[in-house]
Image 1 (cartoon, one colour):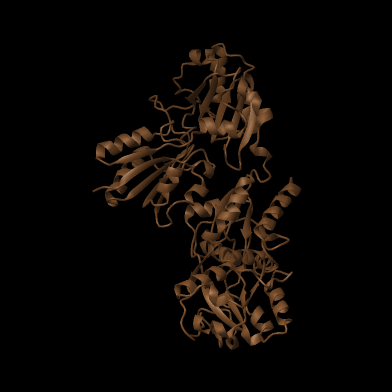
Image 2 (cartoon, helix red, strand yellow):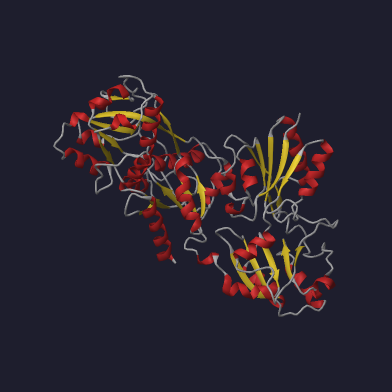
Amino acid sequence: MKGTVYLIGAGPGDPGLLTLRGKEILEKADVVVYDRLVSPAILGMCNPKAKMVDVGKMPTHHKVKQSEINRLLVQFACEFPGGVIARLKGGDPFVFGRGGEEALELVSAGVEFEVVPGITSAISVPAYAGIPVSHRGIATSFHIITGHEKADGRTCHPERSEAESKDPGQNLSLDFETLAKCPGTLIFLMGVANMDFIARRLMECGKDPKTPLAFIEKGTTPYQRTVMATLETAGETIARENVTAPAITIMGGVVELGQTLAWKKNLPLAGKRLVVTRAAKQASGITARLTALGAEVIETPMIETRDVIPATSSVIPAVILEGQSPDRITGISSADFNALANFDILVFTSTNGVESFFRQLFAAGYDVRVLAGKKIASVGKITEKKLLEYGIRCDYVPEDHTGEGLGRLLASLLVDHSRILLLQGNLADDTLLKLLPQATRWVVYETLPVAELPEWKREAVVGADAVVFASTSAVENFCSVILSYTTLGASPLSGSYALWVGERSSESKDLNRESLTTPASCFPRLAFCIGRMTESAARKHGFETVTSDETTMDSLVKKIVEHYKKES
């Protein structure tokens, strides 16, 4: 018995261009062997329990040789009988992707495999730059050509060594005379290092020096860049504009259409990478909004929640209520649905509280009818919207969408405050209990911090432009996790933004800027926040903050767009 290997094309970079079949396999994979150009957002789709193996190659540095990759695929198939081994490759596995070599190795070893085609960069990258590879009256054919070959004439993968040769072009065995006469669009993959040589040879063979040409760097990603040139100016343009891999080169009359049809660069968040720290089950909504606006989103949940098992009249252990003052432990318990009749007002302060309450209510054999006659209060519009999904309309929502605003609103009501029930998580602060000292609090869920980030996600965070926070706990754990890689002696990461934070002290778990003695791993300084409490927590850790006008995702997304419009 051996596992099955799936040769999956990850597409050119945009995670939205991964096929449904590819995503289905990644979600159940036992092992994922991935290349350098695979988007972090696609890696985020993988089974969180999968063994992640980075075999990526830089233009001048082979992380893992192809022969070793072939061997690893066979090895993992043997180590995981009946398992799913995903070989995740940029673009399409069979378009200069060495997928055929890997497939032959698997056949030789008796390992079953499946090929999952990917969208090749040869077509998709020009499309994202507004350049159709064929167009009526301009080009009736297109030709995909490798711009780099090994000394033995074998082609290289698009993300593999583009600068192995000290003499660019010496290993190319292209039929330049035929290519020069070709009337269609010429698309060169991996050709940047050799393009000056290629351009000169094409002109020597009769191709018009004025032929329009475009270099497209990092196509379909937030960092996509298009540089226009002509055949005769190719070499000097590469040097002047510092065109680097990964990039494709496209030649022909269709290139000029890119001046008119370029669409991606006009998206308001094009060129931005944003880290979303919401819990995985909550992140999809804002991720979809930001992605549609052109951003690359790295979902990096910093907390996870789980229901607190109801126990009649049980008091939550102090260890769960870390941060609570001792006089608040008494009277704080887990859910006891037999006691619901003792309360007239139910108060929800988060969507997690709503979901946990109703899950436990239904599991206990009750339904929403037990809430008949009770008033419902919500801290803000997001929680109010979540309650509406359960058919529950709110009676009280403060204009100031904060715990303090909610507490003052409820305290002003001419009701028996002892019949108010607070439904919160274990990390909720004392704000409501201080304003409503006679109220009862049930802890219906607990928040657990994410202990660590995989290497690929740390690298993605380092290259981000900003972090999106929706809670103070997400801020605290983000900073704690990032700092841990420094305090534990891990190699510091590098990036365009750096934040210095204080060392963890024995007296406090807080990170601050009081003693700037430890250079934490570099990460974005800009934070987009929901709510003033989240903003305050982010500022405490040295972030520059932009806060939504309302405590809604729509308001936050609007604020993000407005910020980058002002910046540009």
